[in-house]
Image 1 (spheres, one colour):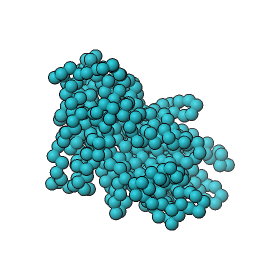
Image 2 (cartoon, one colour):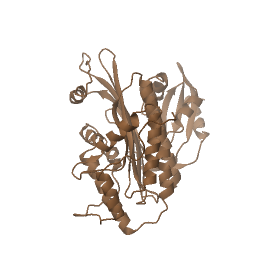
Image 3 (spheres, rainbow, N blue to C red):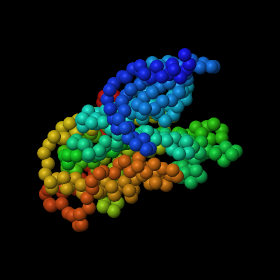
Image 4 (cartoon, rainbow, N blue to C red):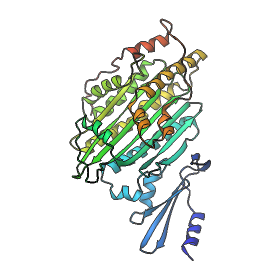
Length: 410
């Protein structure tokens, strides 16, 4: 029996881990496929064996050095396959970049799982690659739901040579690189980002982003840093909700540095400032950029604690408020606030502007954060003493929601 016949039989009797269906986006069409079907086949070939891993409708080769069990445990929980080849990830398992890629894939899957649980329907999963072969990503979007108007969770991994323009920007921040003789300066950038816009005006919008950047110069010296954060944008104030959100992020920070929460809360308030309105986008959270530590594993451990705080900081707020009744006027106010969200993202957000200026950028993924519905009313001013006026005052005058002194429990 030849290899082709063996493969056909293996695929015919492939085991299915779970029969959950999603709409899987491709370049030409969308079709229903098993969400987490996993096929691992061992086929003898000249020079050794290899494994065929099949998840959803994607097949790719994984070297026989790794057992099917290891591959299954690595990928079965993700929304799509990692951008980096599995063999490369496992071969370089101790590298920070490999660990970070697994972390962003896991974070995406964990958050999507919670959103699907609350909404009762699956995400559209769009696995994409850059045309020049320098990277790709997995974009997950759910929209027009009863609980969530629009929820997006995106991961991307990009490799290439750093442009001289970006090099100049980084030198201005104190980075120093030496290019190779051929003029190249290899880099790798990766991250997970999400914006979740609930349907109910009493449920706050939440955004998070965690990213890693690494440059390797001519002397094989690696320069690296992390960035990220998470922030909350309510249309109406519920002080208990905001306190809960900030406390979870302070807990995550205090595990690593007693000054992190105070510093990163201030950076968050300053970053999400809509200058043309003289107000913040929301009630804050944490934000950090260019985070470096003596040992990169320490920084990765902090980012891991941050990703672990996403669900407990936000999902209880949705469960508490998603079934509340609301009026037409409250829905209109939510749309006005979402207009402000659009203004910040398109005018001020550095990540959005960087994406627009990057050759070959994937615009659909960049604009994933934009809500389905937003509203601009001419000269709209909230009525004095109203709940709309209350949140507006807080956005113009950020406050400390919790005691920022170090926690006694580490």
